[in-house]
Amino acid sequence: MKKSLKIALIVIGIMVFGGAVVGFYLYNLKPKDLGKAKPDFVLTSIELLKFFEENEAAAGARYINKILEVSGEISSVERGENNSMNIVLKTNSSSSSIICTFPSLSDPEKYKERSQITIRGECSGYLMDVLLNNCVVAEGPK
Amino acid sequence: MFLFLGLFFTVNAQKYMTKNGYIGFFSHTPAEDIKADNNQVASVIDASSGEIVFQVLIKSFHFPKTLMEEHFNENYMESDKFPKASFKGKITNLASVDFKKNGTNEVIVEGDLTIRDATKRMTAKGTIEIVTGGLNANTKFIISPEDFNIKIPSVVRENIAKAIEVTVSMKYAPI
Image 1 (cartoon, rainbow over the protein chains, first blue to last red):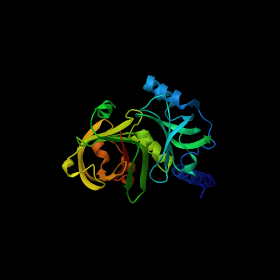
Image 2: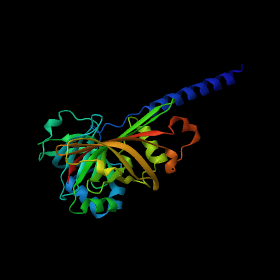
Image 3: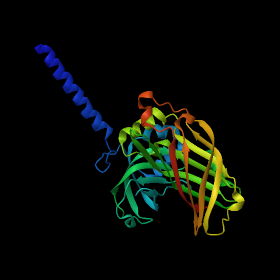
C-alpha cells in the first residue's frame, strides 16, 4: 500500500471516529443546569407579566428561550408528575401569574405561600400565565 | 385564547380549572424511546354543560435529551410559528357523572384537537374522579404525527413511532 493512501485512510478513520464521538456526545446532551447559568434578564414577576400583557409578540421575541431571573411572592406550590414541582408567583393580576416548573425540588415544604423568592428559568412563553421551565431557586425563600 | 376566556368568564355555572396540569407523550420504536413532559397545561371543565378545554405551549414540553427537544421544537412542531396546541370538546355522557358525589366516573370526551393549526376530531375514554375540593381527570389516547402535517425526514422515520401515546393527568379546583 502506498504511504499516502495509508495516511489518507488513517485521517479518514480519525475523522469518522471523531464524528461518532461528537455525535454521541450531542445525542446524550442533557438540558443545561441553570444553577450556574448567567441570566439574560433580571426582573420581577409583576414586570414580566406586564410585558406580556401589553405586547405578547414583542415580549415573546425578547424573552422566549432566554434565561430569566424572576423575583416575586409565592402564591402556591403544586406537585406535578415525574418529581416535578410548580411554584406559582403572584403578579398584579388576579387571573394571571408566573408558573415556574422545577424538574425536581428538594424540601418543597420550605416554600411557603407569601414568602419572597428569586427563580431562574427558561421562558417558554405566555398562555394565560407566563411560563418558565427548567427552573432553579436563585435566592430565598425569605 | 378567546374561546378559553369565553368559557372562563361565563357566569353561574360550576366550573373547574387548573393551570398546572400534566400532558406527556411517549413514542416507542426499536431504534429509540422518546418521552416528553409538560406540567403547565391550562384547562377548564364546565360541569353543567360538559364542555372541556385544554391549552398548552409547545415549548413547555421537556425531554430528557436536549437534542430531542431542539428537533421537536425546530423541525417537527415549528413552535416559533405554532406556539400553542389546544383541545375543545365535550363530555358526551355527562348525565352519568355526578359532580356532587365523591368517586370515579368513566367518561367519553369528543372534540377537536388542534396542533400546528391542523384540527382533528378526536374521541377518548377517560376518568373524572370527584374528590373533596375539586376533581381529577385522567386519560390516555393515541395520535399520529401525520394527522397534524408533521413532516418527518425518511432517515429518522424509523426513530419516531407512527402511534404516539399521550397521557393526560389533571387536578382541577373549582372557580
